[in-house]
Picture 1: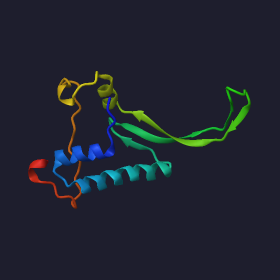
Picture 2 (picture 1 turned 180 degrees about the vertical axis):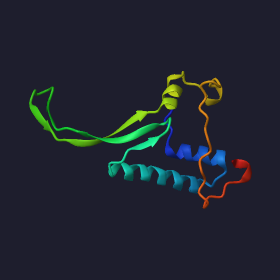
Picture 3 (picture 1 turned 180 degrees about the horizontal axis):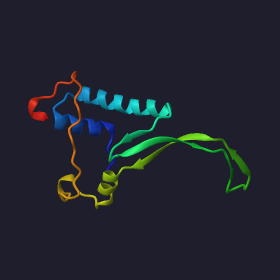
Picture 4 (picture 1 turned 60 degrees about the horizontal axis):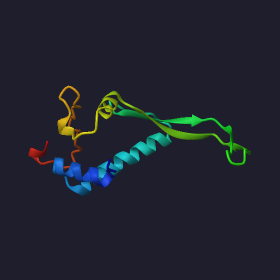
Length: 126
């Protein structure tokens, strides 16, 4: 399995849409920044069929160092949880293969995202 970076995704989106790379990069970064901002505020983010991000409070607890057997107090903390959506779960459960080889019954329909008016998309790229 390969590691796909944000840069890789930006390049793919640029190629597919014809939108300038720096504009795609800026939109992707703003999207990620907004996720962080909303999670910091304690909000739940739901992306239908993709998944849900939410912050959960973990209670303080007493843990034990396995080497020394000494008790250690672990303070409470907030952690981000992600619950996978139905279409993503079904897609990931399938054997790894190029997306074009996924049977039509299991293929995920990708709808074009709304394009902000500040981004010019060539007519043939939509």
